[in-house]
Length: 489
Image (tube, rainbow, N blue to C red; front, top):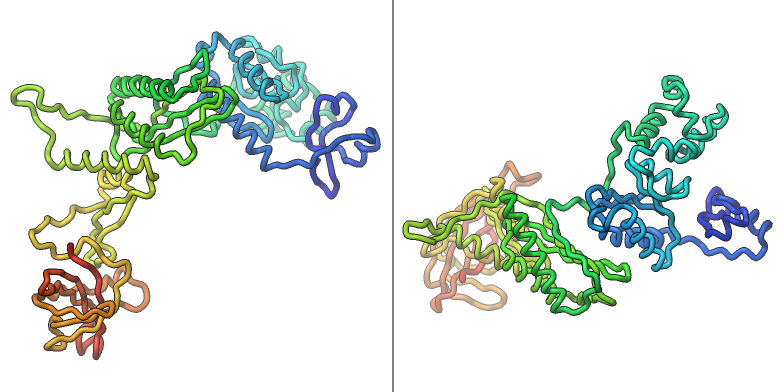
């Protein structure tokens, strides 16, 4: 029951209510007049949608191409999947039986086109439509089986066109002129004369491997062993295609209908099953909500997405073999560490820096997710870092916000001889600078910031600081303020 057009109306009915002559959209007052003891429950659209999504997740066990169909239906593209279940009839029986055991009332149809299956399931008796039998199955059905809105159904009925067979035997041009080309397109899609696109809820994986179990698998050791076997199989598929993947997802289908998914992302293309197994082991160990098998998993699937060409560098297997360059090996090792940490704490919490084409310290580096670092570098979105030197000119760590300091200098525009920062007085033994950095006028809106003179200073104890004078003495400010901006290691 829900409220529509200013009145409470029936929105869905069970089989007994339909048998008693009630129908959807009927006013609740009229329904109670017919059946005084009618039991009604207020609808909860959010809960209904969540339940439909859960059923759609469960249906992934039959095919990865599952699409939502309105508020109460699903469309499954089972092309190429039926042999895994012993044919279309066996797949349909298995699906219906499992869902009925979970308490659902449903009707299903299998046909050569999505629109034919939709019409037979909703307005026919369901079942399997034989190959090339869409015409015979659809002609006795009402025009509503094409998914037409009520206004067009009413217009067709006024012309005596109440069944799909009536449309098929009429001239097409007058129908298109009066009811729109879409009417004929729907008819042609249902009969297989026009293709119909299906929009799955989840993107189709580039490559996947799965294993079904005659008896549900409930022991952790067995689950991990099954997952390791799928990693080997998937790695073999990727190797045969000459590719690696940066996105992997393991799906665990429980026998009671629950589905649990675990995903990992890598910074570089990967197809090494041992490395993949380590990442999934870290992911499983770090779960706040442990993987609960319940009565056991009857299907485990491992899929790969975001695949890329994967070139393997031949190691030193014989004399004269070429080893991986030091820079490439170091980058790969760093990426593996980032992947491992991201698998435990999340991909958005591990970041790396990209060099930026700017002298401004705040703009000179950009923090990005570590898993996207390699992709952004390959796209040329980061220039090369400056060559390292024995004495770095800038600190590795900047303060999140420059902090004001009190400075005593021998000459107004010279380096400081002492300064006070966070209530502590620091004597300066050595000073280098200034490094003068003017504001980037092309990247500034409004008032242009003053020129900064940066100094590297060192205490007698060896601690080094990076501080600056904010403005040119006598030209941009009479007494320019000083700020602490970073600490050297």
